[in-house]
Image (cartoon, rainbow, N blue to C red; front, side, top):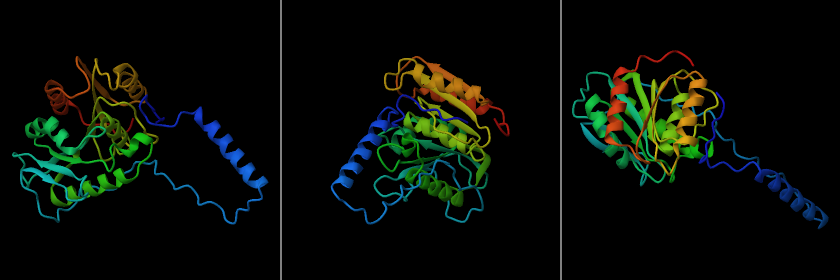
Length: 277
């Protein structure tokens, strides 16, 4: 799948790169003329992980199960996250799990408030990590500390709860919606469904599997205008062969309760995902 940068991708404008190269070349020439001698080569640039692949998978439960309610993950210090276990959860039966990603400058508590009704209605475990910085590193087209932290959080949940392998999904809002699309597409062998609320772009080079996709966006969104974001994203995903349910509503940059209900209905009715796009 090709790369889908959006208007808020945070990437360096292409027109800047030639200027930077000229400046660096000029600086090298000045140093050479001044008689400067380089005694060792500069360290190579660090390798950036572009795969976006997650290693954690459901397996044998070895840890202590968590009781119903919201619990800190206990993995990340000041920026950590939450695991929400609905009251209807039965520890002896495999439960659906949803990885939930907040927007820029957001936190796990905000997403729990937005999607708790979904979790309670469908008996879904919600894993809601906090990003390591103010937003997800996927916004810069890379996968680093956030990907590692999410993998650790998934592994922890899999070690403590029976999870239904075919009912693992990823959801997100705004920048988190963009990251949810990327992780879902790059890990379609783990996530069977993706829910993106007001996403702005998609970074996904090599799809794995074909998760079903739900996209919702407000037609009056002033943060990520729908024409340059979700409408474009949905068209390109469909062109790439993904099954996408698009829900455009009258409103701005938020997740209304009726949109959550639409997502619940989609989760109930969506057929099993295909094996590939």
